[in-house]
Image (cartoon, one colour):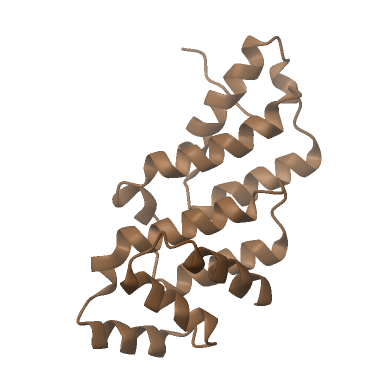
Length: 171
């Protein structure tokens, strides 16, 4: 929880969020990360979670970006993201439903390009791909579309598809 609070604190200090979202994030910083506290806060602000959904989704995207800065997604970071999505009432499909598809694609493409840079996906990278898919609750096909775009770049460089941990259908 300390890692989550540290990163959330940095995010609040960045000044990139509205006062409403900062109020929600301050609940985390003040050890009030639970449904009762967020419901009370939203009630006091006379808003619903859906009214700030775009901003809550951006918080998760930003947190994921910060977690991936070192190219490692630890179990703790994955748990923190799960907790954050639960606290912010983000459901499966929300990222695409609320127009964050390109943002999600940008985060994943950035990380996948690093993984595919050597035109080979090892066992650890294959496992990390599973974590990346679950970050944003993507379906297999949604994630595969993003992966295959990056894998195609490797194939264009001469990589053997059997080393890329993906499946590309012929067009």
